Image 1 (cartoon, rainbow, N blue to C red):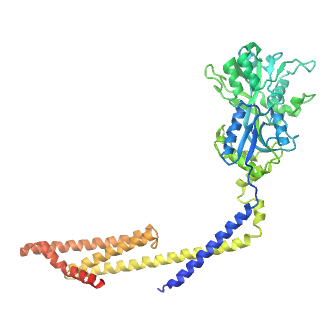
Image 2 (cartoon, rainbow, N blue to C red; image 1 turned 45 degrees about the vertical axis):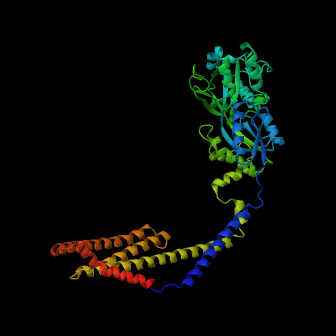
Length: 505
């Protein structure tokens, strides 16, 4: 077989590696060009979830921690109810907000939806002595003092709409039975619970909140309130289709079509006695993450990474998944959300395709050339491995042939057997060295070579054992020591080895 000159091999290797390196550099330059000019995310953002000391505020702070860990310092600021948060985001005073989907937000032209999160539930807490009656029908709350939540909050709007559907309205509408409304915020609630008598507390409280609600927990454990069901979620949602007549301003703001049935699990707020004692069905409303339209897309993408790719996604069950971004949006979606969605759908977006349009032909040609040369290099390397493997197999076959010739001879000499044994050991050592260097190939090639080498070695071992047995029999017959006869038989081989060694030196 004609072998390639060493110089040609080296030249081919240099050209192949150079082409492959140029392909990789060109591809890296194209990717870098795509990202060049793309502004980094903001260094700091503000996030609000409404009043402090609520479960929603705890959720906001957990999200802020995850955002901060991704290089964007997030600061949580306190604010009022849903309408107050929407106004802050619309004006640009706050970058992001967690708002309830219970109220309309399309009138705020600079507010953009970033992502729907989990479902919040409407908690209806009633004094223990009224709980049984209110649990049978909400009509038991007529004429009672009701805390609807802070003014302009989603709790107020949703509570007013629920009471109206149950035939209960505020006192300023003539001809309809009324209730006395309160609008206590969390700080006022703490004051009432700490200093006011139980008679000063409202008869019932409406609180739209993440489960478990910190406000509900305080009323249950410190003032003996109980949860009652709002079992008509489907009727409430469908009432938006057939609703007629004049509406109050707060009720008109409620988006009934976006409400759903939700369940508060038993034992959520107390174990003994259990509160609730059984699953409580009530209204559920999605919690939305919104942002000002001037917040950069890169910043929104970083925030969405914190929402879906961190422990935050597992704060509620079921965990948040990116598939929620494919749901119909309530308001106009932020461009950053659209860009984030494109990550999962296509590895290269429309903007990337446009940026690559002028360089795809060059990159394709270089990549093709690199792959061609790489494949050629692989084939050449495999060819050299096959040549080396074949050469070793020829050597092993020659040794096996010599062993057979010695075995078939009338008299087996010890000297050639020892020479063949040493040759086999040298061949095995070279085989292992080439395998370690990668010149021989994988473990399969090593196995295919070692099997005949070991077989030949075992064959020689049997012949040597046969010679030893003959020498021992001869020594016994002649009255000599078997070791002396063995040394005499192997002495020519040792002298030959010494002469070879002296010649090398």
